[in-house]
Length: 217
Image (cartoon, rainbow, N blue to C red; front, top):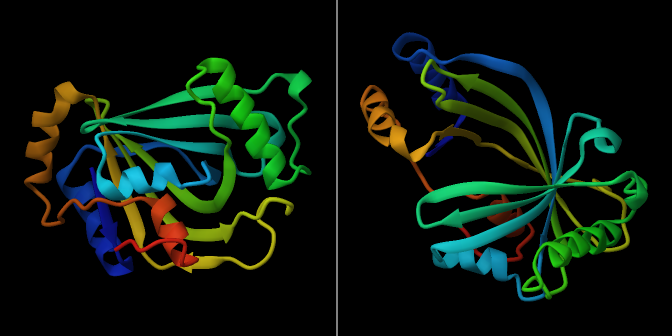
């Protein structure tokens, strides 16, 4: 469940966290870095726009400046109203490096996909790079809450290095509540104590739209 908040709304949202919930900080905040990939037809983006119930997003992700230590390739899957992720770590023999080009990353990640399932025969292309600052919270029922701010987008060109050139800033903040399906009733009651309305939102689509790659509101 996502909430799209300006800076003033974010202050009110954090006040709700403190006064009306049992969320506590779970981890130290960190910078999240992602490179998103798609096929030549932008099928992942178009499935999201169309609201297809079975869809996937493909991204390379790491935190802070630890690219060479904890980089993972992720498939973020949506099945109807449920989201989950599949993770792929890199072996030392794969020699993934922060000095590679965006196209290099796409090729390596595509091999991961193809080795996991032959249906991933389409080629991946780098599409957009995203960086933001994330805060982490959790309550006594293991409901998680993240808050993302200082969101930045870079265009991901084939032969360039990651985060090369000028970026576009996104002025809004994203709060997201994450929970297992059996806790839906509990979370619904929790949200009765806030006036904020959940909204559909995708950083990937916002990033593409920022560079006029598609229309997304």
